Image: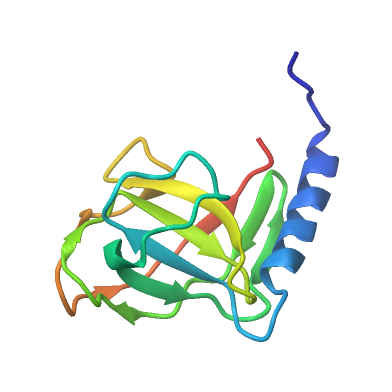
Length: 133
C-alpha cells in the first residue's frame, strides 16, 4: 500500500528535515564516494572511498518552493582524491547520515557535468532542491 500525503504536509516535513540537517556544532555536508552505494544510511560509508566533502551554510534552507525546499549552494571544495563519483551521502552538523543519493550525468539524484573527479578539482553543488515525493 502506498500512502500519499498532501503537498503541504510533505513540504512541512522537508522543513523539519532541514532543521535536522542544521543540528549539531558543524554544518551539514555532502561527501562524494567512488564505491557502491550502501543499501541503507545505517551502513557506514567507507572513508577510503571519499572523493570530496562539500559543506552547506547554516542554516541550509534557502527557500520554500510550491513543490519542495531549496537548499543554499554548497561551498566550493577541492577533491581530496581522484575517482568516479557513484553516490553521495548528506550528513547533518553532528555527522549523522541524512540520506544517500546516486550521482551521474543524467537520470540520477545528483546530476553532474562529469562524474569523473580529478584530484584537486573544484567541486560545488549550485542547485539543491528536495521534494517530498
